Length: 191
Image (cartoon, rainbow, N blue to C red; front, top):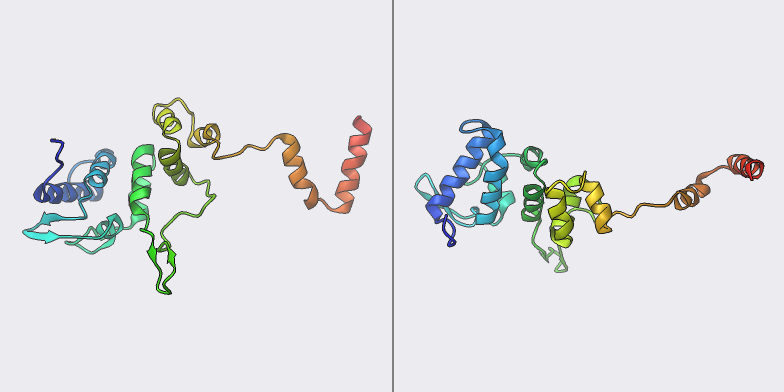
């Protein structure tokens, strides 16, 4: 493939091959993450030819959810479930699925509700954050140097691991008076 990318006809073929792989018509699901990566890299939703017609869609979400032939008529959650084990494609997918910031109907700036909540610890969210904000740790994750997404997020400082003392301090206000008295008695007995 040349550095210029695909033309509109090739983009249409790529989009068709990708959804056929997903639905089991052509190929196997093991090829789907690689095809999906290429769909995102080439931004095939922007302009492609399929069945003799030009199709232009505003974003990846539209390509996935619009009814055929303009789109695939699929559930984005099903797509995400297939690519969940490929950290790079999952992060690319989630980034491409985000809504673009823009004016809300009331005229205020904001997103369209498609963004992940801040502070989420889901694997997909962490993969996305690592890829975007900590590419070194993300590469280590992809290369197997980190045992899990959580381990990479801890190394990057995204997830803060509390010390045992910090954990105890966080739980103290949740104890009843009786439980607190029992704890104090136990501490006095051991020290």
